[in-house]
Length: 137
Image (tube, rainbow, N blue to C red; front, side):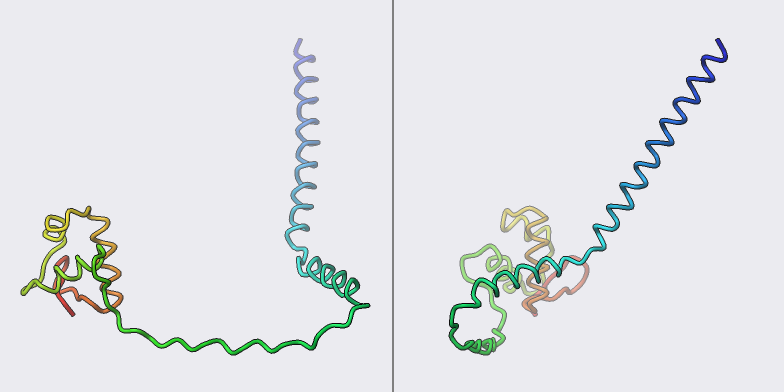
């Protein structure tokens, strides 16, 4: 009976080794695929397009217009938005206002107040007087 168990264990070990070898080969193949350059595929598409249009006369290449320069706009809050209402409440407070009071006045949850305050501070509309207390910049 012991010899049968030993034979069974050896057979299982052999199967495990075979599976391990196959897995290592599979991983090696995957790493080769990961290292391949996708630019070659793009180049082959270009050549097929060139071949297809080789017999046709093409119009001269047009120059693309230069991108328009954008002028930085002054940060303002749009009237009627949640953002505008929070910034207005902060601006109207004389000594600053904390997040809890903002939540009570607006009815917004803490996450929404936090996001609006973050955006308004980044735009330079408000400033932090102390931790959690904000005033007009």
